[in-house]
Image (cartoon, rainbow, N blue to C red):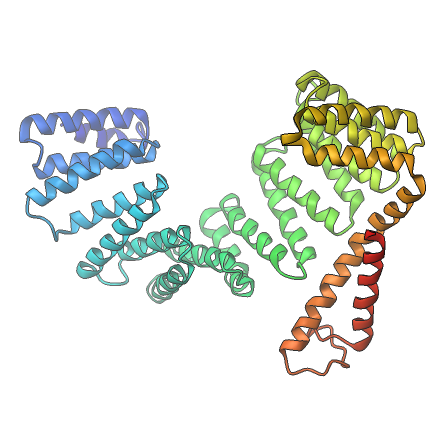
Length: 460
């Protein structure tokens, strides 16, 4: 009676799955059925299974696992070892074990559930497809990517043949297989799955849920060599706009994706757009009281870094001084974080030819680092190197030139070396130039050697 009452309230929208009220009703139902029918009666076991699913949905996986074990023992006593209900319970147990990060247990339960369900239901049944997809997910967590890919391809093939392309099962299978391709660094295959799937995800789940697919595709674009940076930026901008429109620009998800977009702008040297976006983020990070908190400082330091690289040292210095005050207030003068902030500001003062202030800050930072060399040895070496640069300005100037030209040279060098390796693995002539095929010319080989020599000289 209690369980039926709980179901009725749920149907009316009063209790939702996973709500504390739903759990209270179902706990009462289990107690009532145990009292009336006993522990192993099918009605009691059904009530326990329902309670286990509710516990799982509210994150109480330990209780859910115990209930499911009790249900399985009860079904065995009922001589229902090959009954469909058994395999459904085992499938839930696999899901609970996965959420507990007990992946070997999840694999054992998942394989048993899939064998049982496949022996009773047709291959295209949704329960079989979902059990296959969940087992493949477990294989991925165990880094058994080949097994996961094989199972996911089978699920996707069956789903496409028997269901619509826009069906939930088909879309989830598409996403899962794409994730496995990414794990195996098969970016072309992942791209081919994800690009046409975005519109379907938006149609079925709405634009907010579709951002998960878009974000994965951005990752794929950025993982290719060389990165498909322009496409990644345009897609990331769409993600940011969707999140801002639906949640507002102060929402955590929106801010996080905006910060990724900043990184992409910086990689493409679109520093003006990067700084404008950082200032938009800073406004949200400061909060209503406009206070310079630590989260705001992280953004301010990124802005200062852009300004420093553009040789806008006065602007960078103003932001860093404000950050240093906030660090001292939050962490104290003798913390490693504050010392790192001092070292960063010291570099800016040095560029402003305020060597005395730069030296004083670097010495203060070094004094903090030396007290905790176990954790700050690398920072201590940086401080000593900076102090040495102050004493040896000519040597410092050479290193500045090296730092200024290192990144563009290294980027070009990586691309040329990549093309060279491709040309050696293929049936190409080394004196032929073809950027599309990645073939290296003799001129480019000369550049590789020359740039390598330049970098080697400056490293000295």
